[in-house]
Amino acid sequence: MSTTNKFWMSSGCKSIAGILVAFKLIIASTPAWAQATSRHCEDVNVNEEKAGPACLLSHESLGSFNADTVYWNLDKYSSVEAAQRDVVRSTSVIKAFGSFWLFTVGPVASRPLNGEHVAQVGPISIDRNTSYDAEFLKSTFSPGMTAPIHIHSGPEAFYAVSGDSCLETPEGIQVGRGPGNSMVIRGGPPMLLMALGREPRKGFALILHAPSLPPTTLVHDWTPKGLCQAEMR
Image (cartoon, rainbow, N blue to C red):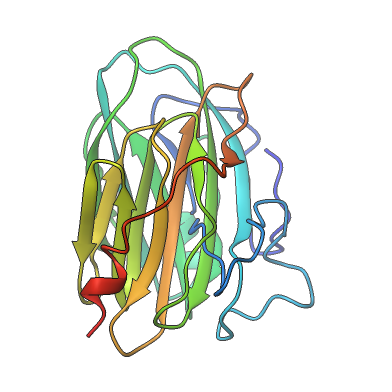
């Protein structure tokens, strides 16, 4: 399993129907940073307390699921040793935002034996028996920051450790407020992600995509209506 974070521990197995890994948040600062999915979280210039573009935690090959939907489970641990006790087969442990995490993507819920179950995000609609890769990112950004307009070739899910979130697409907006807010969006439509509220938004994101397709593509043929800006307060 490839990763660039020095806290990752891998069991050596490639992928399973419920792969434990850890996560993304595609983000950019105002007016528009380029998306930084190739910017690794272990880089010396990456500071999770400082607002800026997302960094890549991991790119994983998940394989296919015999299901129409999957869930993203987020579990938190006080130490790497505690997290490792819940590791099974293909797994990864990371450190982010002051804790160690295990993230599980699969068709059924999971609960940790030695940690705290933080959230279950989903359902996330997928194509049955289609092979998927996953990108997991994290980011910190201040209120009013936005990501550049982009599309994903597959579904995306967000989880915010802190702060408020707004996602605008041609179909309207999703708004999540307070710690633990989450959102899911299908692949395809252009989107604008914005941090709302009065405190920094720290979060993760998950993009699922076919291995042959790019997870993220910047686009310039859609103009948001400013619906997220109207939610600033």
